[in-house]
Image (cartoon, rainbow, N blue to C red; front, side):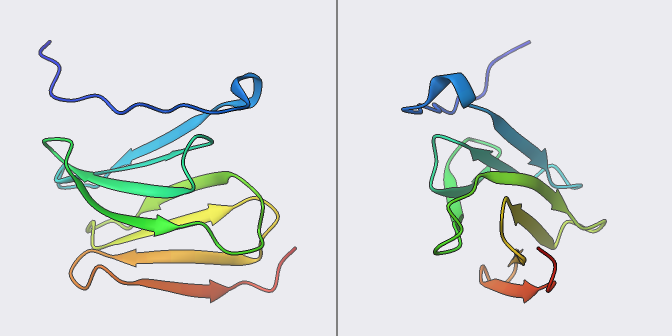
Amino acid sequence: MKELFSISCRSSRDDDAHSLFSWNPQGNFLAVASSGFSGTQIVDRQGEKVDEVPAICGSGGDNVAISWDSCGANLAVLQESNSFVSFWNESSQEVTLFDTNLR
């Protein structure tokens, strides 16, 4: 298998380091969240950064889940210790916050 690209995830707390990744259904974008990043990076098939979903201010928690909708138009990002879910839209490349009111 040919390596297309690699993503470096360095963390100051390597004991707790973890990474999440999710290809969108069309295979055009890869979402990558790691305890070494401040947010969730979105890269294209060549590994070039397209956008980033920033960490929610004041959450202090790591990303615990990332998932694309069935058509690949939206990415949901859930952070630890936060009632907000971030939604990134592929066409507008904007982030919308949704408050679940759950703690």
